[in-house]
Every structure is written in structure tokens, then in C-alpha cells.
Amino acid sequence: MAIQIEKRKPVSLIGEEPGLNHLIAGLGWDTAVVNGHPVDLDLSVFMLGENGKLLADEYFIFYNNNTSPDGSTHYPGDSRGGEGDGDDEVIHIDLSKIDPKVEFLYFAVTIDQSEERGHHFGHVQNSYINIRNNADKSVLCQYLLKEEFTNEDSLMIASISRNGGAWNVEALGQAFSGGLNTLIELYQ
Image (tube, rainbow, N blue to C red):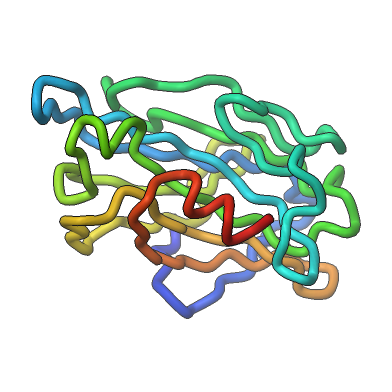
């Protein structure tokens, strides 16, 4: 059974299931057309050191940089409109391969071309991120976006952080305006 994660309440991923290393972060949302264009969400992950900054630009995984230098994290492709059931975008993570200097994985959701198209998270319905065990595809935890962000177009939705020999996942739900560039500036 999946755990519903809540803001400021970390949940341990490793330790619950021995040998759990391969995860899938999945993003889903309902289709919407606003101002003549589909609302297109993009999932990305910032791989940060203990100082809260990217180890290098290549540790920002998104549609234009789909694999981390250590080979631990891979983004297989972009869904443009949220069609179909289940995850619309995914990022695969092998925790056993993550560079030991990486302390945090921050998962971001942004709206592609939000400013040009007049899109914001108030147009997005039934959005979630879940973390699944790749071995059996079971959902370990899920965060449902319930807040209404009517001016924001980027969101830090969840984090995975080192905790000794374990990894913790936590819902963040921090919204920003200014698109992907705003988030990149925070972590470079």
C-alpha cells in the first residue's frame, strides 16, 4: 500500500524494503487545453551536494540532459499533454549508483512555455508524483498536488535525501513563478 506523503513529514524509503535501489519517480496529470494549447508539464530532478547546489550542470536531469554523469538517473522522454492513464513522465533512479557527493534529489515540475501560453498550475488537475519500486512497480509513496497555484508555473514537488545509510522522501509543494530558469538559479 502506498504512503501518502505530506509536506514536512519525511518517510524512509530504504530500510522498509531491503535491497530497494531502483526507483521510478512518476508524474501524472489530466489533460487540459488553455488558450488553444495543451498544458504541458515537465518533470526534472536536481542532484545536489551537501551545500544544496548542483555538483555540476550535468547533474540537472531534464528533457535536454537525460542522463546523469554517474549513470544513476535517466529521463527517457517528454510527454506533451498528459494523455492516458498512469504516469505521463518518469525518471528512473538507481540509488546504488548515485555519486556519493549527491545528498539530495529535488524533483521539479514546470509548465512548458507557460508565459507565452498563459498557463499556470491553476489549470492543472489531478497532478501527482509517486515513487515506485522498479522491481515490481509498486507505489512506495505518493504526493497529490491539492493546492491551487493560480500564478505559479514551477513547483518543487518532492525530495529524496540521504539519511545515513537510508534515503528519505519528503513532499515539498513549493511553488514559484518564472519557469525552469527560476529553479535553475536557485540550485546553481
